[in-house]
Length: 127
Image 1: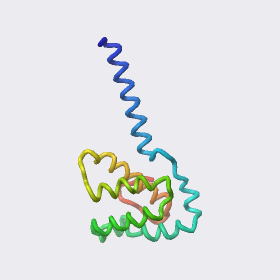
Image 2: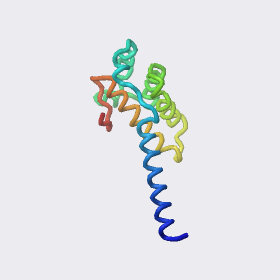
Image 3: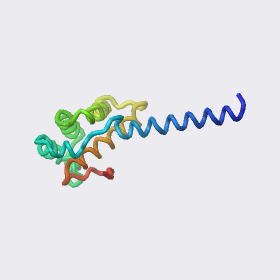
Image 4: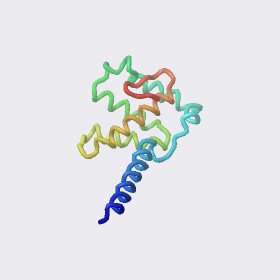
């Protein structure tokens, strides 16, 4: 393979990886957080998410955290449910080859919670 073709191939792979990661980072589809915040379900969602707040998170056992995430998944809008699924799957079966996708799901879920709930600050999330 010529050097030019090799460089072009590498650039194409890098661009595809960048767009794939960006797409995964945004969840692939958008969630209208503002619309969700206007629903009756948002108040219940935020009440359920309260134990995840940084000030209270140390009180949660991993088992409790998983149950909170499961309850939030049931209340979340469709555009973010897949991320909750991925995170819950990681909690149930942590596998090395899924670590990066699970981290992205964790960030995506945390960002959604922070943007939906004014009084919740999830550690390590900048929403």
